[in-house]
Length: 464
Image (cartoon, helix red, strand yellow):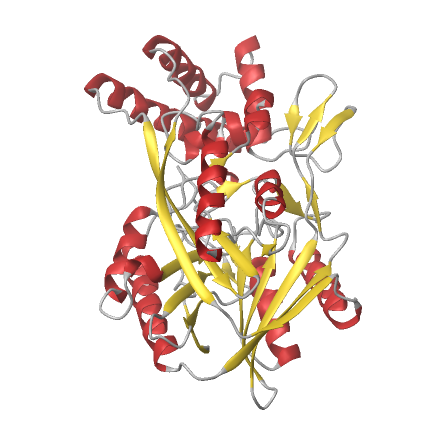
C-alpha cells in the first residue's frame, strides 16, 4: 500500500467567536493559544482506489460544509471514499449548528473549504510506498473519566465530584492507539492517534486545538512524522482537568507521551494491508414529539428565566437545570447572566420547532451517514455523532479477533446519540443537548441499537 499526507493551517483571523460552550455568550475570542489545522491522509491499497481521511481541529462539520468539501474533492476522489472527521475541540470557530455557541462566519467557512480541498489533493499527489502499517495500543490511565454519573437522589450530572452518592458511572476505554506508516528504509511517513476523550480540557476564550492538537505536535516530534487525530466514542467521557485551563491540558498530553515512551503495548501489529471501506445511510427515528401546548409552556418558562424571573419555584428549577447545561458543579452558584443567555438560546430553538409543527414540516427521523475504514487489523467505524463509550465497547466486542476503534464526530455531525439505558436516565446529553443541535426531539431509545446493528454489518462487509 501507499500513503500520502498533507496539512494546512486553518487558524482563524480574529475577531471571531468560538463554538462549544454556551457560557461564552458569543463574545469574540481574545487570542490564539494554538494554531488549528486540517490534516489529510491518502490511502492507496495499490489499485488506484484512493481513500481520503481528513481530520479537522474543529468542533464538527455541519451538512453545508460537509457537502461543499465533498464537492470540492469530487473530481479527484468519489464521495464514498472521503472520510471527514473533527477532533471536537471546543476552542475553534462555529462550523456546525449549535444554537448560540458561536456565530458562523462565511469567510472562515471559505477558508476551511479551500484548505480541505487543497490538502486532499496534496495528500493524493504525495502518495508514496510501499509502506507497512505498524500499530500499538497503550494504556493511558488517569487521562479521562466517564462524566455521566447517576446519583442516589435521581439526578444525572456531569460533575467530576458530585455532591451526592454516585450509584452508577459509565465505563471507560482509557487506551491510546498509535498507528504509523513506515517506509522500507524504516522511516515513518505519517501516523494516526486515537483516544476516547472529549476535547474540552480548556474552557477559555482563546483559540486552541486542545489536547488533540498538542498531542499531534508531540507525536510528530517524537516519531519524526506528521500525525492526525481521531476522537473515540467519548460523548460521555471528559479529560481530567482540575480547573479546565491550558496547564491541565498540557499535563494530560505529557502523561500520554510518557505512556508512548515507557509503557509496554497491550496489543501491537505490523501489516501491509488491506485497505477497504464501506458506508451506508441509516434512518434514525426521534422520540415522540411533545404536544404543542407542552412545548409552548417549556419555551415560555425558559423565556421567563431569560428575562430574569428566577425567584419563582419554576424559575429555581429551571436555573438548576441550566446549571447542568453550563457545566456548573452540583451545589455551586449559577451565573445569572450566563443562565439567561442559555435559556434564551434554548427558547429560540424550541420556538423554531413550534414553527415547524405549525407548518407541518417537523422531521420524524434523521438520515445518518456511517462509514467504516479498515487498515489491516484496525477497523475504524466513523460515526457522525457524539456516541457514548458503551457504543464503542459494544462494537469492539462484536469482533474479538480484530481491533475496532470507534471514531466519533464524523460528518455531518448530528449531536449526541445516547444508549437506550441513558435515555431512561436522562441528563444533559438526553434532555438538553438536542435543543442546541436544533433537533425537534432526542433520538429514540432504539436509535443507538439501530446504528450499532448497521455498523456491525458494515464492519463485516469490510472483512469479507
